Amino acid sequence: MQDDSILGQGGHSPQALVSSADVMGTEVYNHQGDHIGSIDHVMIDKLSGKIAYAVMAFGGVLGIGEEHYPVPWGALRYDVSQGGYVTDITREQLEGAPPTGEDWRENRDWETRTHHHYGIPFYWV
View 1 (cartoon, rainbow, N blue to C red):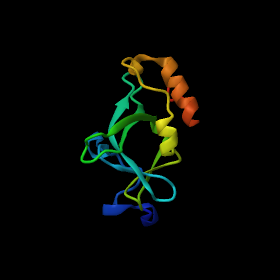
View 2: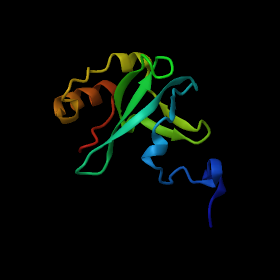
View 3: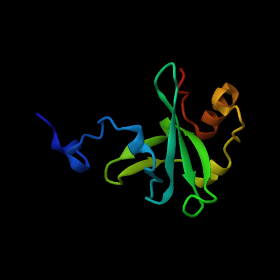
């Protein structure tokens, strides 16, 4: 029997699978309900299959002047009532994050600094 108390919009369980296409564009809020950005795309570890990062977009108007910041996937939690992801990350943390260079996708040192910056456990352990 299905427990209706855990169902979200559309009668779907919050643990249900979601397409990466549906994650793109999903809004991100802080715990006070303030909008802080949206998910532009996700980065998946090819070997483990784990989602490593959500690349968040914020600022700008109609996509112009928008900034993109990869944040560890573990920093986000889907909130059915918000219809988006909720995080403890602040704009100040996003802006103060270790800068991404051309090689950030292959740079374990950058990943380590980024996870320490946000206080999120490493996805690769």
